[in-house]
Image 1: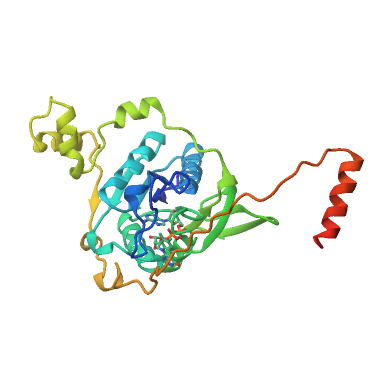
Image 2: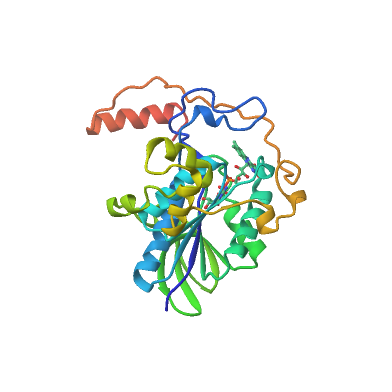
Length: 296
Ligand SMILES: Cc1cc2nc3c(=O)[nH]c(=O)nc-3n(C[C@H](O)[C@H](O)[C@H](O)COP(=O)(O)OP(=O)(O)OC[C@H]3O[C@@H](n4cnc5c(N)ncnc54)[C@H](O)[C@@H]3O)c2cc1C
């Protein structure tokens, strides 16, 4: 049996490579100071969905909610093997907290229609809440398996999944359709394929047409480019909130009860260190020191 999957992916600031002030005074992220990357655990979620497709067949649809620039992660997903990508972008959703974000994503997943599995990363590296996956499942009325590390078995009605925690593993079974949040230890995401990169190099949202026209002189107008892309299934659909019947009262800053008021920087400075030799004397010296410090 073939399974259709939806993978929710987020473009996030690369928090490991900060080039300036990471946060603005109003508590929002200064995206200009941070390069944007594919949220790492979303790559694991995509890989798990692609493995289901490799084994059983079916379609993998990737969905992101974000600014037009987030089309970059959608193209990356197409290069890695996704069949379809959708960008959900709407200024009115800016500033959404997890409650509002999960509501919009739920409306979009419902619009996508027939699916057997929804995959999310466990957590995004910017907001760091790990709430969006479970909230989307609740709003869709789906059972959820969080911390998914591997799919043990999958059949027409049921999935068996191994979950991974710092203190152990757990195997659970669940009816389909269901939502999984995937951890980093699940797999090694496949790299983009050169063949797929060549095939999808022009995949774009209409907001990117101007930049393509500057680089490719065989297209004279945006209309010509649009019809070329549409014929080859390379036009990435862009949905607004209105197109997926979002209630605008429930999104953006107005629909978000959580406000980030302040972010404190914790700077871990280097402390005094000295080397202990790996000998019985060295170990004895270390133990005595720890006892003296009341650490042991
Ligand atoms: C510093 C900081 C602190 C924040 N603190 C809070 C807070 O305490 N409470 C709160 O409600 N909001 C908070 N936010 C806002 C939060 O980042 C947004 O609500 C965000 O849209 C989703 O939350 P998250 O990043 O924590 O995602 P998580 O819940 O960590 O994401 C889990 C998974 O959900 C999916 N997902 C998440 N966002 C998207 C998306 N836009 N498109 C597609 N899939 C997605 C991905 O698969 C992702 O791996 C904070 C933001 C910042 C920058």
